[in-house]
Length: 177
Image (cartoon, rainbow, N blue to C red):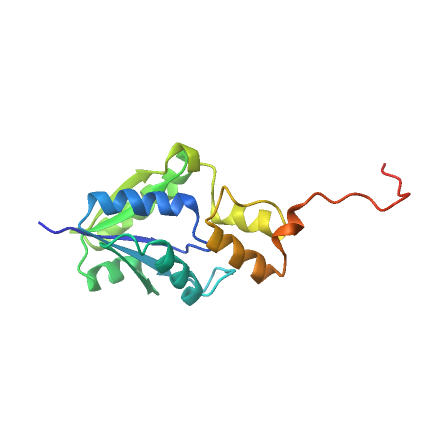
């Protein structure tokens, strides 16, 4: 039996945590659709098209993974692509409550669709897109959070160079209090 799974998210930007879930999902399901949400309520750093380009480059070594986008209810998108599984990554117990609620609502709306939770690998459990963006905004090092392709695009988008990650010192003669 071929199982199609949808891994939805904003992926703004894609992180090593996202890639961990994609890698592991690709080994469990015959086809994985990474579905970039076009969420009008969320202020994103990258457009949906930019996120899709990055994800396609990052997942090109997976023959059973494809990247798409959707707007509206996830469960409607899942029906359109004829999937029967939604994959959700969990970093910490704090993620579970919201994901649990969403899984039950999706089950109510579409009983034939199951949600599978995957714990993000321990080494990625502290990573979130929000944290990566915040660190990048201040010129911090994000090499352990996102792939270099994503890092470079983040700094370009923010108008920062990678060298801006060097610590700044006070000007000559300045007093530090």
